[in-house]
Structure formats: structure tokens, C-alpha cells
Length: 474
Ligand code: NAD
Image (tube, rainbow, N blue to C red; front, side, top):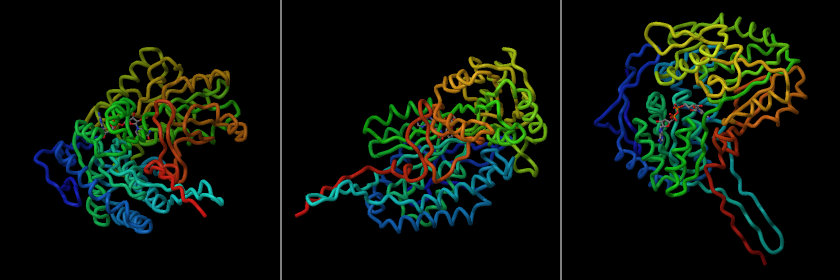
């Protein structure tokens, strides 16, 4: 068991109180985590505010080099960090299709490097005999980052790296379920960043509002549930903080009548059950044309029957547990509701006995919109498969949901599927794929999946304001 402390102004801070971080596969203690109080949050914000004076003025090259040094440290400590992610989050080290915690580390490093290379050059809005007008990008100040428990380290990197790359300073508050990998990451990053540029406070949900309501915080970047996103929006209004909100999704995938079932089934399975379904942009509602319905169900069942669920530290495990008990309760509730309403369970659907928050890979057929499992995001290893016969009807159903994060169309006619993409009300549409995000492509939701984007130049811009400079000539 390692020992963890808050990092404020480059210093490790020991707190009087702590809370337990539990391994969801065993329900055993992973480590005691420092519990910050309101004073710690205030100290962290003050440190970030003081550090902003210097960090916002250092050269672009210096900030870029610092981001690459952070990536170097992630690479050097990847094995330790992946181990912590597995212990606190539950995902296997390797996992199904190699999408476990080692993949999370690989993603974290890739995002770090790509973000380091991003530029926000000065744009020229006008340049004539009378006037040159330049558009400069300026950092905002102190950024408060609040992260969830599903991809704890990768999402921390998504928040922190563009913030510091563009000259802001940060106070990060990870989920109390999975704070340890972020604590270790911040400790490592502080070996190469000036004191105060990156600070961390860990604690229960109660310290979140202290950060989101703080008058010296200029922006909040939040990834988590829509319910919490709404609360953050209210508490951030005091000083009109900028917001990026990446909230829940309930992504639809539509299998058209001309799809090649054998080819698409592995990708549908992988993108539905990635991280045991605990991924914001996982495929969560699968609509299948009547003519292929039984074939798709059989193909997915064949894959489901071949995978293993267990403790992610053991060899050969494809999927880990649900990360925490409240989330497991929600998955069970939605499954039981589907059962009570006559849905057909192709596999899974029974919670196993013994330690750990395990739930089997579960495929649910003969279910319709209007059932809770379809309408609500389960955020767990359960997929409803809905039959449709009319293309107009299926787009109406896919869009009839408050969430709008991602969506997908599966077809042998890629050009036709691409044409249909704009019928989907969501931030990203994939053809014959789902949930595949990249550091060079902006990602974000519409409707109640939030607003603002992350990644790429567009994501970096969200950590800056525009300053227009009018330079007269002659
Ligand atoms: P959550 O909203 O319960 O918690 C997320 C974070 O917010 C945690 O750090 C928590 O401590 C903090 N928090 C809780 N109450 C707060 C408050 N009042 N003020 C400030 N902070 C507060 O979400 P979760 O259960 O950790 O994550 C699961 C949800 O996140 C799912 O709905 C999922 O779809 C969504 N999610 C979205 C994305 C995305 O990119 N869109 C990515 C991952 C997860």
C-alpha cells in the first residue's frame, strides 16, 4: 500500500482526516486517501492564483517542453500507474481487446504528447492600409478540474494538459472512488512543473462545490453526471466562470439492413462493453433492423459467452467489476425493471455471490423504448437490443433522448451511412465503429450531454479568451 498526500504549491500536505479507497474487485482497502477540507481548497486556489502570474508569462516553448516532460514521467512510471488504476478502478491491466489500464496509460501519454504539440497562433482579422487587427489567445487564470471514476487518469490528463499548455494553472479534484492514480500523477508532474501550477485536493463530494463556487477560480472543466453538471453550472455563476461540461451519454447505434453481421459484431461488442460499459461514449442502445435482428443477437451472444469477468490483477481477465456499489445498484435496478416488463435476457442478468461489485456481461433482447434500460444510461455491462423495421422510426427513437454524446451507423454502404450521419443529434457519429476518440479530433456533447469540446485546437481554445488588438497604420 502506498502513501498519498495532497499537493499544494509543490508541497506534499498531510491532512488530519482520511477516507478509504476500496478495490471494487475484492472490497478490500487499497489505501487511505487524504481528506481535504475547505481550507485546503482555499490554499490550493491561492497557490494556483499566485503561480498564474509567472506561468501565464513563460514562453510557449517552455510550456510545450514542460508538457513533454510530464509525458516522459508518465512513460517512466506507466507500470506503477496502471497498477494503481486497476486496483482502485477495477479494469483489468490488459483486458478485452487490450482496453484495460495499460491502454489508459497509453492514452494518457498520447494525449499528453499531442496536447504538448498544439499551438494557438495569433490570427489576423484585418490587415490593410489603415489597420492591422490581431487576435491573441490569453489563458483564463485558475482552472478547477473535477473528474469521475471511470477513466480516472486519462480524464485527469484531458483536463490538466490543455489547461497548463495554454498558460493556466490548475486545482484538480478527482472522484473520491478513484483518487489515487491522480494523486500520483500530480506528484510526478510537480517534479517538472513550477510550484502552484498543478495542485490537487482529494475528498468527498462535499469539497466539489467549494472549488466550483470559489471566486478566484476562472473556469471549471467537469466530466461526470448530468445531475452534477447542473449543480456546477449554478454554483459557477457567482463570478461567471467559463465551463466545459462533459456529461452522461446514452449513445444509440443503428444497424442498417445491409450490414455485414460477422464483420461488425466484434466492434459492436467491444464498444458497448468497453470498461464494463462504464464509458461516457460507449454504445448503450443498439437498434437492429428486423431482417438481421436474430443474427446480431446470436453473434453478440457468441462473443459474450467467450469472455471472462473477474479481478483485473489476475491474468486472462477481459472485464472487471462495476466500480462502486451505487452504480451496481443502478445496473441491477434497470435489469430487474427490464425483466419485470418481459424483456428476454440472452445472457447474464444475475448478480453473482461473493466479494466484489461484479455484474456479468448482459445482453437484453425484445425490449423497447419507454423501458428504463433503454431510456436511462445504465453505465454498466448491460446492453439493450431493440428491433426496428422503419428507418424514419429508428432515427426518431435514437434522437428521442435527453443525451446527445455519440452515435453510430453500421452498414456495408459506408457512403450511404455517412450521409445519414447528420440525422443523429449528437456530438460525434461513427460509421461501423463507436467510442473511438482521438486527441486530434474535438469531442463533446449536445443537449444534456453538456457543452464545450475537449481535444485538438478547438479544445485548447476553451482554456483561453480572445484578445483583439487594433494596431493603427500610417
Ligand atoms: P458524478 O457526477 O457523481 O461525480 C463526478 C465528480 O463530481 C466526482 O469527482 C464528484 O466528487 C464530483 N461532485 C459530485 N457532486 C459535486 C458537486 N455538487 N459539485 C462539484 N463536484 C461534485 O459522476 P460519476 O458517478 O463520477 O461519473 C459517472 C457519470 O459521468 C456518468 O453519467 C457518465 O456518463 C459521466 N461521464 C461522462 C463523460 C463524458 O466525457 N461526457 C466521461 C465520463 C463519465
